[in-house]
Image (cartoon, rainbow, N blue to C red; front, side, top):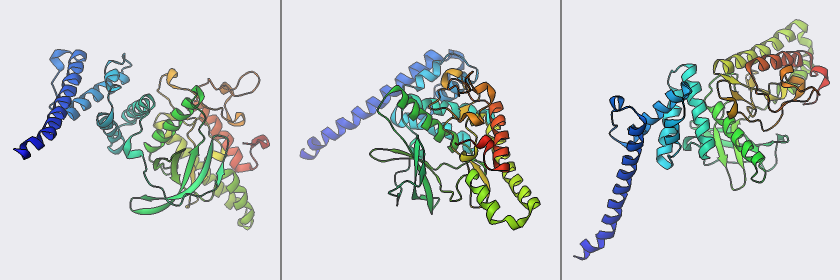
Length: 352
């Protein structure tokens, strides 16, 4: 009798958990039935099946630009249910889908993360070792540190981009959302000339974007050093070498545009050189999804006016933060980068 009475609380807790799970499933299924015409509705057998059904209808809804009926239901999900949505969305990038499918999934994933302020668990890195005490580089909105991270069984030397946080204001909220966009856009891209992102790392006070550490630095500083060091190569060889870097940048920009992403801040300091002397585009803090609604875009900072296309400038020549970056504006910036890399110093001796 003692064993039976002692087990009653555990049994009651278990039954309560089952009831809550069933109640949640019934609720979601009821919401689903109200949103789907009866003839087309085939009730899923479990929570994950139900959530996947909701997600795919939400993506179809987004693609057709219909009112957010299914998307509103998904916004109510939390915990493991939200992770199921994230996992299904992320599978789009690992299978051979079309750029259009990846674009829809990328946009919706970013919208969910920004709306729920919850990052996909598989993108969160729990342990980073040997973080440098002092920054190795940085600017007004971020500082760069170094550290080590286990990636596919290898202990890699990485860069940690610490995003500068401000008190919780509308500006800082925009700053955080742009950080989410930068990470999510990069982690869904796979190209030799686009920076790889390993995920997000958080400590007690800061958030860090994790990328490979490219010790050669940015192309603007790298090219003059190589020209000086290898001056004996001759003019023809140097021109061919610089041309190869420009081709790398062009390949990266084309890939971004094929994936419906505009970089928005293409210039020499945002192009790094990897260990194989290839150009790698980085810093997606101003990137936008080309097909996203205008209301989804908000800039946290201006780009550098020396590299911005005329349509991005105001009458006084200053950048207009309200102007949405486009692929056409990237092409203009790319032309300036070509001059920057070929001539060194940068066009009009601009400081960036």
